[in-house]
Length: 421
Length: 168
Image 1 (spheres, chains in turn brown, cyan):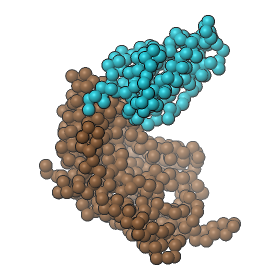
Image 2: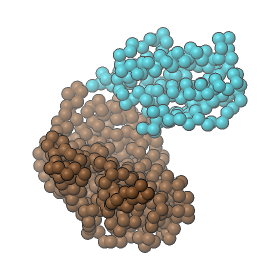
Image 3: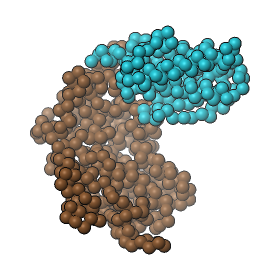
């Protein structure tokens, strides 16, 4: 099949878990990568090697191991900066996950500082956000008296941009949106929205949790007015470990925000009366960070870069197109979101009238096929399409067409099991 | 493979799913609760009507409006069959028996005398992800009944639906 990763069989061997055989001798068909991706051996080995040979606290430890650990941690920052095409490696902040990165942003905007949000100000989000890009902004509005507004979603699963100039106005202080939807798969026009937001002086925050695994990102090459001001993603969806995420921000913006957590290593000096703060990135990395996780993430983004994100993206689009075609052969099945593979990411949510998503996922699970059933932490997006929950398949760079065939076959079986034929 | 599936989706469960008993919200009632399963979004709104009987408080009616999978829907239907018309104390014992079965990891032998159609849920206990589905309406019923017991017995005064709890 044209467009798949070259040497897909070899690539799959990099992921030990993909050779697992489940109950009843069924091979694993892992179609839940938008939930979390699997990890290549190089990530596992890098983390084990660090713990076995180089473990020490970073920055504070003056001994040899401390120097090695610090170098490895800062090397991971360089790798992440290269992965994003960040203009400045110090703009890469390690957080616990994308949720913490977004909460860091929303919290520091509520506090006194040059960017403080207040009554009369407006925050604009979208109806297709993950809960982690809704709730922090609701909290910000409750705490500051600002107003929350949002872009609606069209019937075909795109953002409704018809009223963009009425929505993003002089009152708008922040526009925060998802780059690639975890539920609908939609790829949003970040450039167009950022351009409008910057015209009115608003900050642009991008949730790149599903974009970073799939799209080549080169922040430095984006026109300044289209480049986000802050961008968040999580390590475990880019073949890295859990426990580490990234907040990238423009230096000028990060310098304007007050510190988030106070503690060790984020200070310049501390007296009993007051403290002054370290420059970025350390200003936002209080306490001992997730050291081995960050180092694992460095290995993960290196792995993706060696494969080439253009190739990963092409593979995703090829598999997604194949899956969209296959899914639509299942009688009654309705895909929620765009049907054009070129305009979407690799997460495909769907419903089969007459069978609840839980029941779909349980039947598939007994055939070794792992999908997600539920609201995928995007309840408003489900409400928009009049469904309470959906089944979601999500592919990644290691997904094969044969796995999609197994899914389609499993869905046919599900229909017959529940007597829909 | 289909043995496991068939253990989960017993005919009895699929029958209750397709033709649920006592469905819909009815009056009178003393309490109404709304429970959701936050991980999957399944929801149930459930009302109980109690009255004084010869053996103490009695479950006169349980009515509900539920959104969810086959297991959670069928479970609500079986619940109403088992508790309507019984003294609250007996119904609570059935509740405890069902809870024990669900939490028994597939090692508890269900008592058909007590659970009747509820024994069909024995297979659910082997699917950890589905236990919460089976328990959603039972937790809602217990919550609603406890609330109703705190109000004057036999009163048919409608109450405002105020309780919203998450089943974790």
